[in-house]
Image (tube, rainbow, N blue to C red):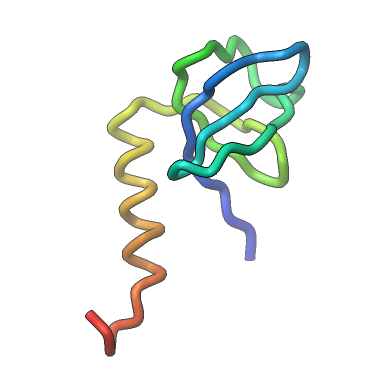
Length: 75
């Protein structure tokens, strides 16, 4: 199974972006996406930014991921 996770671009350095994903900072390549800027919400998969998202889309995606990780017996 593959998972692409939304995050927010914090900084850019050449072909690499620093991205905050739910508070965790990681680096992601820019080779697969176009016109990414600091402050953009993006989808990250396998260490690369795939595309931009709106802040609403990013929030919805994170909530869906959180919901999928909850054990129904503990909810």
